[in-house]
Image (cartoon, rainbow, N blue to C red; front, side, top):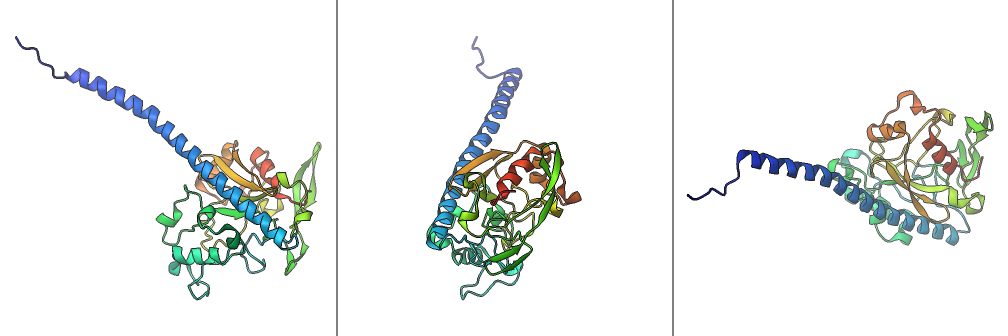
Length: 287
């Protein structure tokens, strides 16, 4: 009598269960590998941006490039999206990737970079999923000749914010934030960040109008902007000495804010170690 070589129903169910288990292990591992690979690309991008940022100040008597394209900031690293004739695109509905790249190429850093790719994180898909989604994935520090000042005339910055609740010993003090515009004003360049990944869509900045600013309402424990969720709870930052590093955000409140975005209560998060890390790197002139 010939024996059947077909699988029984139980055997098929066992095989399907084993495949499902293997996939449940494999897929997260692939996601982790993808995150690691994209993080390496961002490290390379920010290392390149930092080098061009440094070269710019070397060629301009240590004056820093403007890390915001708000109207008040001169010598900006990128410009608003531009038509081919150089006029500014007036609204989001008219904006295309081509016009965004025109503004990028008109920025002061592009002659040093020569590449649009280093301005973009590969995990940032907004330019594909949004009609006017931004190409740029990185924001410049608000205190590095950017937008965090109260009064300015060209490169002359005279007005600064005072921040409260700054930890000091067993209590808190008020400190002044100084927006620097020359490289020699930066204390401990290896600890002061120049660029960080930021989600411009959450902040509705299709023109890439702002730098990365923290300590909203002049409260040390308050986020203003926050890092983008491009690498599953990890971000890449560039620093004034030219190096870039990956940083794991440890507080669950930070991760929740990164994933969903919020403006509730100015994003106050008392005793958040991630805010300590960001705020310490945000003050190029020191406290």
